[in-house]
Image (cartoon, rainbow, N blue to C red):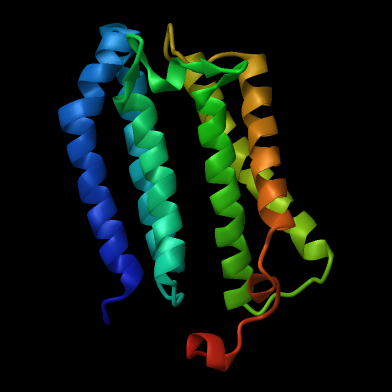
Length: 204
């Protein structure tokens, strides 16, 4: 099996995630949420690892560009910053700036980047829908966001005192996802909005 760029990226990303979880995030979680919510912490960790594995198995055959992998890494680091960085005695995730929680900014940024990645995948597959393509990308991102919100709902129902939030939190997360995806497709480069060619990627 030939080593691909996504193989290295997934391996390094998984290792860094495990180190971050074990050495930093666990203690910060206990400090912010208490030991009664440790089950919630481990459930999210498992879901993220499963997501990494699923993405690697599904998308490793694509010729990902370094800039795209760098965008994914930036989104992950943005998420990590929410749990690691402390501002005025609170996690960055809990900081509110101009009425917007940092958590919503993370949703916006990750949705923005996920829309770009989705556009790349459609291009790799030779799928081109003209003006409808941007709408499809936005709906895909909202669907993925909805799946994550379902997982949070399961956590809320299964684990007492889970810090997921309620209806307002879910809708605000999806609104942030919508805004990020729409902003992404509005500035989508023409190169990503058409099918890939042999000259661009070196593959059919």
